[in-house]
Length: 134
Length: 134
Image 1 (cartoon, rainbow over the protein chains, first blue to last red):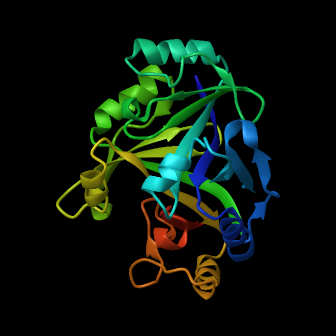
Image 2 (image 1 turned 60 degrees about the vertical axis):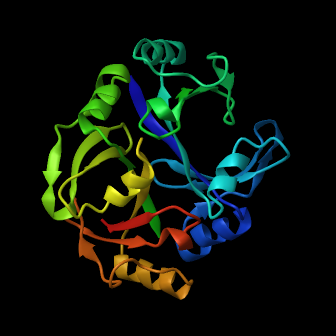
């Protein structure tokens, strides 16, 4: 059921500085910053040969990563996203297995324009886990 | 310079339970647990289509993830590992860019039998970052 690792998201307090570290020092290909106000983040994509890392900086008052950065002011690993073919089937298996889905439990349209949902980190061994239908 | 994302490592307090969650609930292919006493961990590999996730449980008295789990008893995202073609060149660029390499700064043989080193999370926006020569 689990497909590709879609991305790993790293929350950073200073997106421009983090993007320079990845591009100039590590020699990675990084995107221009993209503001996603409806998701409360500005993102830079670090393009790797097999997947991507997303550097996230808070955007706006109600950013979903603001609390994380308040707790981890230097930044840190925020979540991991796996691809699944059938998101509702994956959700139903997770719920039947005792895992909580964040929000109202229904898939939302994520930052890539595809349905996503998040599994509570307390039910995934401390790791906030996103599932994306691809 | 940055190549593939080699793996994401998640520290977990109960490896058998975490492996079952990935295999039975999420339908992923997972390896048998592998004890790596020289690295202080027991690992289960979650094989994804494009990379792998490593579930790590402490092994022995001096496990490098014991302190992390003491601070994060439910577990959490521990580190990310990128592949590079020339590890010493990558290290030298990181050091020239102001980043600290853990330990004595020299590559060690990692859990996959290849040279690795770790960049201080304080110099990578809170993310412990492993570089592996492939």
